[in-house]
Length: 252
Image (tube, rainbow, N blue to C red; front, side, top):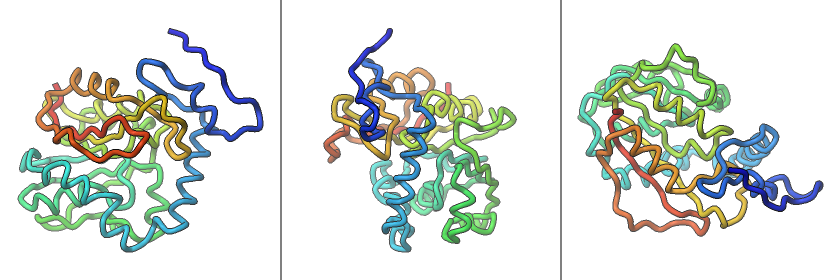
């Protein structure tokens, strides 16, 4: 289906053109590189203004909120095996999941994020020295400094658990990102997923040009996974958000 809309003229703000990217049924999934780079630059400026602080590192980018909404990760299996976290950031959500579930164990962690070199240079990551402290001692952390869209096929089918939290809206190709997340898992593996879905008519967002609705995420998750966990529906949402999906499931 072709969706035509009136787009802004040249010289207007770059992100005003976001409505030209929206498919009427699910939203914006693939972003031009120039628009993605503009979002990345704005995000970096935001962190320089105060986001990247020690106090923020302690909560790990809304980590405690995620722990609460995942019900302390009670639905995670005790043995996580080989774990990959896509779009992990400097702290990883894996670190906070293991703090909430000290009985859980992993054999290794692979961190997939194009920003890894910068995180290490800042000296504040939880995997700074190539390992992560867990309830079972320090575990090795393998670093893959690429975007989710660029994960080599050699990694497909290699992991027992894949974690991807607040990642899709920061990518430039949501289809390729979600394909990677699914491909990384072994059959029957555990998928831990969180993402915000938006009201498509709510206007542009400078930091998050990928804009997908809840219908899209529900279709994708329930088609490829057996759902084990969903949080209560009552949540406080920002004005542009339609819903916030918290999901733990098994690959079919």
